[in-house]
Amino acid sequence: SNAPPTVNDTLTNSNVSGATVIGKGSLGVCPGTTMSFSIPAKDKDGQALSVTSNLATALPGGTITLNQLNNRPDSILITVTWTPTGND
Image (tube, rainbow, N blue to C red; front, side, top):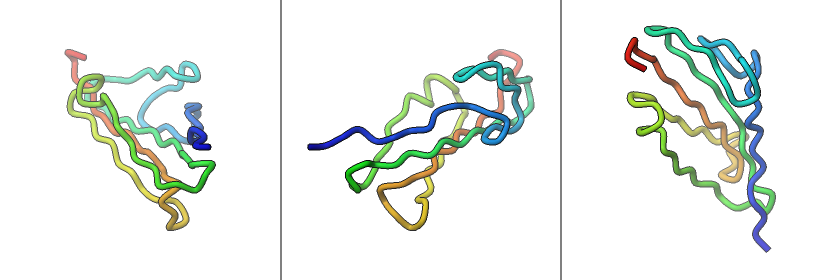
């Protein structure tokens, strides 16, 4: 069977920069200050991971970067970076 990947999506001071962690899925940001957070994902079945995102709509101007962990396509680090403006 194909099990869903494990994603550690908890935001903490250790995986967030440029923002204040308000809760598990909530950050406080300041206009003009670049913030980023990274979360790891691993496929339980050892299959290569692919990621789709609504980042362009949710955080206009934000970027998402994917990096393999331990040179394995079934383990990635997802990093989101965004600089909010006064209009956000």
